[in-house]
Length: 341
Image (tube, helix red, strand yellow):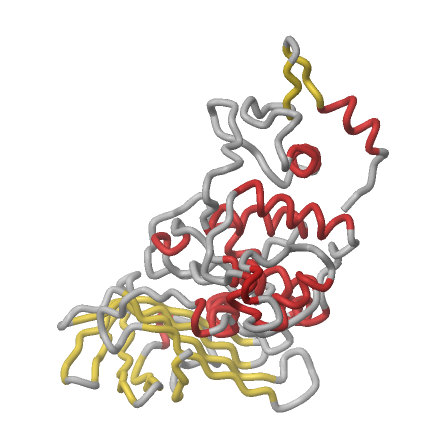
């Protein structure tokens, strides 16, 4: 983050109203608020903004999507070319932030579900997400210890100190908006604003994994006790992926991905992409379920002839393209067995 002389920052951002001093733009953050300095800093660097009524609501519990915005802004994460294909397809204001975080493989729960995004985030998830970007891929205990070692965050239950790290930290507890801003402010003060090599490597994406796959890998990095998942409507639903790299060249790879959503007892929506070196193709449509583990699609959503057969295996999906040349680029097809992510 860019550094400025703090006295200049203070003079530019403080508003005096009568005898009450408040953070610029936030009428509910007085000078004596415990997070005043941190919120002042975060506002200056466009990490946070308030509500339309001029408040910041510092003591309000923070949701995962609010945290996603703050974390993306703090690290100034790049915007990827791809976009997530969500299970809840309705556009959401947080989409751009989750797209950014997914491209770096950040451990979060709400990538594919707007409802999970709107839920309060747990301290354990915050610890893993921050540590992933600041230090690299880390388990829950490693992430907590990182925050404690650098006094970025503290424990909440002293009776468990040196006895149970997770209970001491309070991994299942929630945070307020002010508490998260303080954590990010301390990250900045300790110069933890450079992106870790692990996260950068995921962004560079030499394996050509899609954004959904990188998001799913981020979810899987979360400790099992921290995961929230959308109840599966059907055994068909999910993201399926295959990747093979046979050489060191940038185009020496094969990749297949299939995303099944909106499954019923009779059909499901399917979106498939394929890359074979320099050739790439994609198609989406609706498949009809013919037996408990087989389905077929006859045309794409664009109305082109596209006959593809699907077989659901144990944690995998077998795709056989019968005739779909009118729906995708030449030199690619969608055949293969993909592993469920």
